Length: 134
Image (cartoon, rainbow, N blue to C red; front, side, top):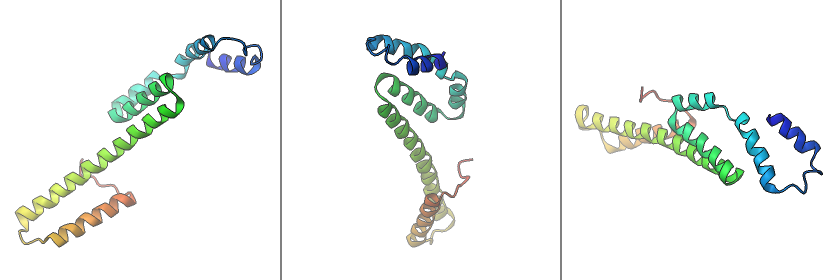
């Protein structure tokens, strides 16, 4: 269906010039269900809820506002997802260092903790993955 709409819009542009925009919008909306893959959206939902939020936000942003706003919503949600994962790992790492400091090494100085924090931040910036949450 969507291929027919694209071909007709390409070939019949001059004839459709005087067609009201509401009719053109209805043509686009009638082709829209063929462009949506419900099964893939369900798989995204099962894998990561925040990625699904980015997908749905982009979809509704494009449908109801503009392509730029839909893209902005998707990028913002994806950045929020990335920052959430990074800060969860960072908080876990800081908690782990605090437990080492308090329980097993009471003389462990703050200088070494700051050194470990800087090493961890550098590893995160370089893209090194930690399996601390698994």
